[in-house]
Length: 438
Image (cartoon, rainbow, N blue to C red; front, side, top):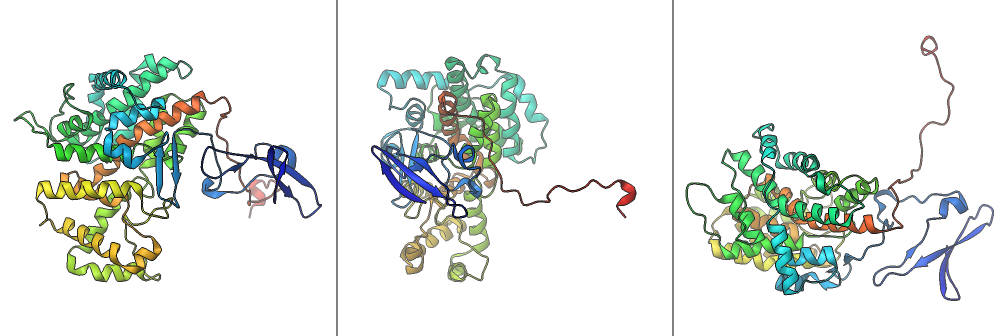
């Protein structure tokens, strides 16, 4: 394969060494990041498919939403650094940016907040759906079912070719996800549902629905609300990951938006994707006490030992996860405000963080604490059970899924997803009747 320039047009030449045939394919340049080889005519011109398990070297779409440079530790939404957004914006600010391409002015922000806030209630009949689940059902199972069922209740936002329908569906999904998530939690512990309030912020509303009861007023702690808001911002979108790609694949068949987001939740449920911060707490529980940390650090360095430190390193980021840098301070702020330094698991977490940031092995391997490490610590400090961790991830990521889905619907080049395969099974065989099979 060679890289050439034909006048203004850059191409890559692919040569079949068996017969010497060659084909030129265009190189497409993005605004930043790696260029891509346009192989859309590969099969038609050459008779070949590409082979790329996990699609790790394949660009499946053109997008203007999120950019990641894993080598440099950069994450940007619509050109804005995640560090700046987390420091200066709130979650609904970032939602508007992801959906519309620009940060809102004051009037736009006020209207957007009003519109989202007034979509937070659920249709009352959906309450009956919760009663159909066992009390010990995993909250993600409930989320998949309830979100998928929304299309049965909101028929006025199912036409994916109508921009207004898409906008209303997008607002509904962003607004109702915290209500659905909090109700899943309340149902699991046998407490009455707490309805959303229109006079408080997005993160505050979620904490209120999670932890308030009808018995007494619930005072919202601003430190905890800010930490929750930052977690939502930092998880809002992350380019073409497994769950986002699932939403796009489902959407490419013209499925309704609620079904598409339900498919994304199902994909996120996998422990290799959304379950990472839950795995962090399980690891801290396994370590147990500070005095056992050296033993587990030694095991983590031993390639023959299956034990791995969860919440360290990242498949995409080969440098420090920029989201972790932001959330680290929030984690320490929460622990300081709640005064929970004597909580054994949190003590283990803070000591593990200190050791790994100073240990030459982890520095050389660039195994730094990632966003899952710190979000797990914050959730634990807030009293959120581990079964809800992935639910909160889904709540935050909804806006990213919705923005990516909208972009895909509006892209005239997008086609129904249909990956190819390298077939290695049996070639054609003669059919044997039952009496011939021995």
